Length: 100
Image (cartoon, rainbow, N blue to C red; front, side, top):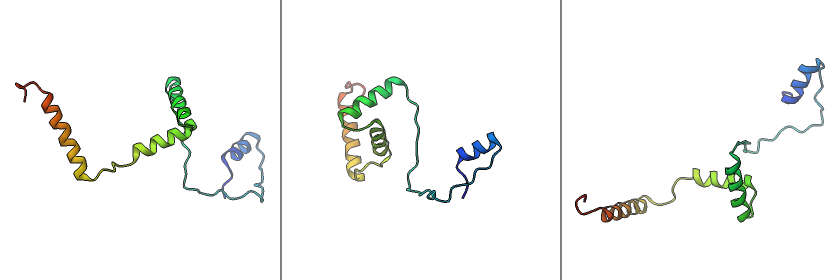
């Protein structure tokens, strides 16, 4: 197995070769990947406030928001169409008579 990046860097910097300890466990692929985000301070503060209200960490809230945002709409097609038609009818109702 390949040496960790930090060990390779250290070897490059020092010129020494460091043997990989035999007792280190092999990394396990748990199907998860790490994501780092840089946010404006105000956005982070807002996330922290919402997370606290929900008794979550900012990371847990961000994960939940991403998951919710990436899931396809759960409405059956017919129900989604009915909602869209109702929204259009409501918009048409609010138009002045000359525009309809």
